Amino acid sequence: MKRILCYGDSNTWGLIAGTNERYGPGIRWTGRLQTALPREEFQVIEEGLCGRTTVFEDISRTGRNGAALLPVILEAQYPLDLVILMLGTNDCKTIYNVEPEIICDGIRLLLEEIRQASPKCRILLISPIELGEEVWREEYDPEFGRKSVAVSKELKTSYKQLAERWKIDFLAASDFADPSPVDMEHLDETGHKRLSKAVIDSVFRIFGINN
Image (cartoon, rainbow, N blue to C red; front, side, top):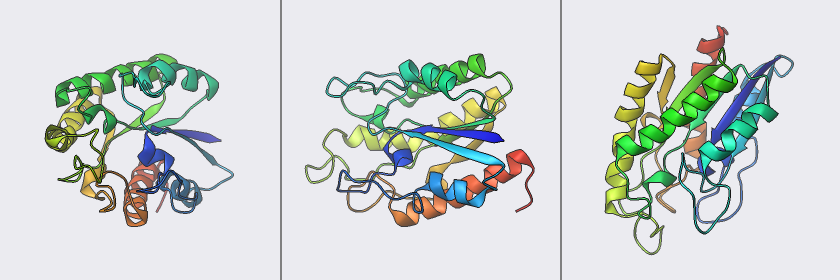
């Protein structure tokens, strides 16, 4: 059986914008991926966590440093045939005040951890959706600022270049989905549906499955 790990933040977990609730598996892009694949041949492991970053600690919530936890997840879920990695949105928060290159360095560390744990495992790197233009307003998420929006828009280019250097598969979520108008940050049902189709197409191609 082929095993696929989806490692990400709230947009992998499936947070419903404006709530603390989660979309069901039939709506989440990860759940749609599992449904599209032959269940007897593929297992999709959902490992999303709200607030997860690439390498930064969240002073208000424990366990959000993606690089600190990933080696444990990789060992627990061994063996893996594909890791789908989509992180970076939370790194754009004002408290971290980093440039796209620093976020990309965090992704590189995660890629190194994957390669060390599973040298033959395929990797699909996904740059996250862009933040909405007014996400920083009080009624949305003031943890972000105007700079956060600009940084989020640059991640696609940085991640694509990193994927090319590492010779791994790449997908830009922002090419297929926009943030919900409810909070300017999370995928809505339409976003999950559109992203899932792109991910499914990529996974089919990676494993040589006829669509």
